[in-house]
Amino acid sequence: MKDHYGQLISSLAGENEKKIVLLVLDGIGDTNNDGKGTALQMASTPNMDKLATRSATGLAHPVGPGITPGSGPGHLGLFGYDPLIYQIGRGVLSALGIEFPLEKGDVAARLNFCTMDKDGKVTDRRAGRISTEKNRELIEKIHNGIDIQDAEVFLNTESEHRALLVLRGEGLKADAGDTDPQETGKEPLDPTRPPFENSRTAKIVKTLFNQVREILQDEHPANMLLSRGFAQLPDWPSFEERYKLRPAAVAGHPMYRGIARLLGMEVFAEPVKPREILEDTLKALNTYTFVFSHFKDPDKKGEDGSIEGKIEAIEAMDEALPLLTDRNPDVLIITGDHSSPAPLKSHSWHPVPVLLNAPATRGPYQGSFDEVQCLKGELGMIKAMEIMTLAMAHAGKLQKFGA
Image (cartoon, rainbow, N blue to C red; front, top):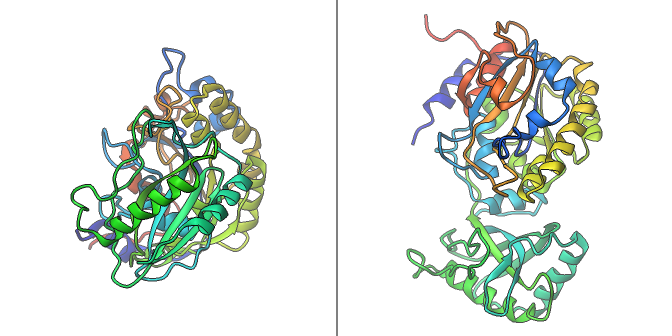
């Protein structure tokens, strides 16, 4: 598939010194929580609400109606890369996120430590979110115990229950099936299931995981690994090439640093708390013309099923927000990469709220920043991949199209 839209934007992009900030509240979208309202509706967000009274608002589909996106497609859409064209497995993003020296031809996969019962069924896909230190201990134990002849195997800790697998060898392809069943009560999937039954990579993965199961059998709660997102490095146009911007990322979690690095953004800082995220965003604005700032907690709390935790995370960012708004960047976008409703404990297909604060908006302006009110705003319902185009236009960075 040719990216005609991306090529158009690239041909129209021009340079000036106006600054764009994209603040992503991961997993911010929600459902109505049994009639109580969304997390944004229930949260006290005076600063976001005030901003909404002078901003263009709307809702955005990360991929399309009814499509539940992973974090990769969700962010690629926000960066203006059509997620139906630019597809990449989670493994490459994890590798780049922890600065693993990935080489062309390497096959990378994202791993989760999980808990399995005596019947071999997954009871917790995240092993109780074990500590990063425990993760490192288990990775070392696995490394010392495996014996794989057909490829070089690299296992690295990412954070908490998350880890990285990289296979290196001649002629390997990213053609192994994910083993993560994506729900509890089921056995891990077979990486050699059709259409991967003749894949050399899949057979290596199966041998590896059989050994891992033996090595971790006496551990608890992390007694197995699950894999997903087998991928190899792609050759894509960089963010700077596409938009003529000097981009930087402020992201505390490896996955999101990986997405940024994949597109050629420099990782400026790695904070995780709202105040530090915004302070580092302000520092980055002194040098860069585009700053992507990422806040993980709303997604994390939503996936844990904690609506109270999600509300607290939103309120913490709102309390810190004046640090950024007092600086008055030329264009400020606040949105999410996907929805993570607490009742579902997972990503969902629901569109996410979008706020664009910039010159030359026209309303109608809303009195609060939430999913219901945003839909009444100027932007209406859009695709996430159109957000960057709007930001560029409001920053005066797009030339006229045609005669």
